[in-house]
Amino acid sequence: MTTSSLDMPVRPAMSADPEYTAWAAARRRKLWRRRILPALGIGGLIALWWLVIAIFDVKPFIAPSPWAVVETLYAKRAVLLDNLIPTALEAAGGFLLGNLAAIAIATIFVHNKTLQDIFFPVVLMFNAIPLVAKAPVLVLIMGNGMEPKITIAALVCFFPTLVNMVRGLESVNPQAMELMRVLSASKTEIFFRLRLLNSLPYLFSALRIAASMCVIGAVVGEWVGATVGIGAMILQATFNFDSPLLYAAIVMSATLSGLFFLLVTVAERLVIRWQPESSH
Image (cartoon, rainbow, N blue to C red; front, side, top):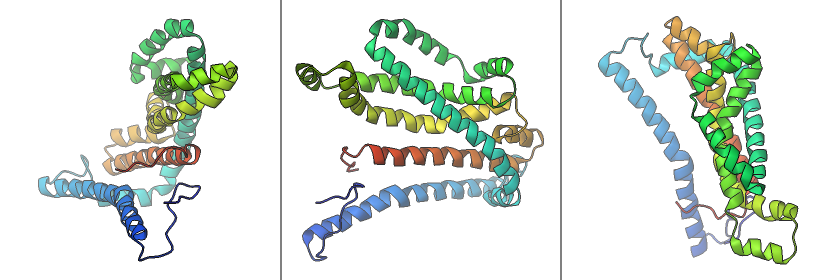
């Protein structure tokens, strides 16, 4: 079956053709799995939330109903958006900084095993320090501006990307590597034409994780010291027992994480076109 440049099947001309029947069935299954099933999952979760509130008569200051959260999202949309913008900027800055640093260091590690043996355990131990312990130190060093929040978000993204990038750069087919050497390819040519292309699936797997984690890092940074941002709004709503606003802020942060994840997924489909589509 032919495919377009965006890896989407081209509809056969004859609707009575068995090939068209198979194509239509595959398209329906793809639509069901990628769109309808996730929508059903989200709808089921909201229904369960509403049911628990109704059956157990949960007090509004503990857990509001979904409708109360929706009303808060609409009534305070301006305030929520004003606080979402700095969080989005911090998360995006941390995402770019952390992943670029991880890619650069992974490249150095692959070409210098001695440095990898020396510094990789150091990176591992630093990553083992809880995020809530690193955040106050960074705020003390950098102040209460956006810098410590961006750094915290970058640190959250750094380690998963470093590990996956090193693995991707090292897991090159030995036969392909030997062929490049036979052709007298330089280290630069081997890196860009073989290692880098081989590492892209590993890299995008890490970027999908980092796309969600960078928002968490920005929010945690705002908990430690900030007057604006989703993290600061979550703390204020908690201290004021304003549970609808608290849940609305959580929904906004989750939406931001989902948007980052979607952007990475779209970028992966545009960049990695040689991988066959999953048959699940």
